[in-house]
Image (cartoon, rainbow, N blue to C red):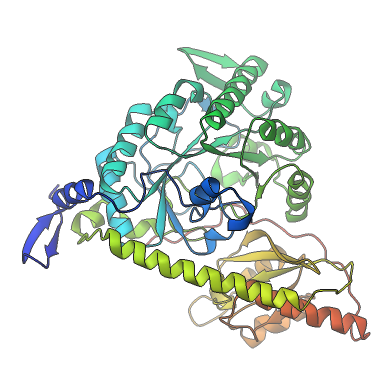
Length: 519
């Protein structure tokens, strides 16, 4: 392979990407060390709600802060193909561009290829603040590749935070190395703390040159997961715990998991729905194990929320995802393409762009607070959900027919609270609407009273109204929470005046592994 080049304007010469990487590695005094964090993900906490050192770690991390995920992007590099456990909900696929779920990648990379890709993405997407390694196997089952990648990134892109996602089996053996490489955010997938439950999820684990099965395997796994979590939090490393909700297997047990991980210092708990479509080829998919409905998932998250911060904006990303949560731009950055790209890793430019993003965030929060003040003193027991079509930045800025997902907010007199998202099939098919897809959209947001959009056609508007969902387009390109609160205030006024009767909605379907389109 040949090195790509970029034009050096000052000297008028061409520079190889290797030279760019070396130049960035030598640049001192810009940004923070990888992993020192300016992130926020999962939790809705703001700057005044967290200690300064925690806020700096989470304020621009799209997975550790619900608010930040509207503005900042992440990327995963697929450098870790091997895995040391088998999960009944997992089927890793390589060279796969049409599924959006964990364990799936289009390309596997070497650490050197991953470092080049990070520079290319960060040069193109200045709001990309986080580099994660999440597979497609387990990063700690591939420690040499994982830590070599972190080493290269910390040398060449010191302003990017480093993250690691692991099943936790090998975690206690690598905590010191994680700390040494300034990996300041670690996600551990913990689905049980009871080995009897775990035996229904994990057929086997492989540790210390031996394969364990059944309850023995689950007991070993949970002991090492919890020990690793304690070791990380003792070192001040922020930990997020992922749990897959499997109805009839671990759904109610996850309340116990929630208590266990909180007591060991976890910062955030992310309860995700099982993806079990038969076409994915997982054990649960082939045996007919269903995933939860939208309201089942929300009820469990609500039950756990009193114990600790809950993450509700997880997109169950591919192991090679690139971009904002809810979008995947990985097809723009294949190995072949990045070798042809002009790379200009401008640290100062990235910082300036992110400073403008912060100004936008401040304006958004101020607008929300201003509108919320108008609800002061209002008394009502009404709580309802609304869906929002958005491209990001906390704005209602997506056409109904172009939405691949809808973000869902819960409205009450306390304000607007983000509670999840719903993937959908694309309704607009280039000049016409797909009626079958429209029905899947309606099923996905069936528990919502309204859907906020930048624009919507007459036909889908009529079908939504017939289904009892109000299409709202008068707040196009305005802030989501401010607009939702304003609409809710009007809704309460209509109820009080007898113009409408508030009626609870039904349940909704969670779309399993929505397809993505390869470029």
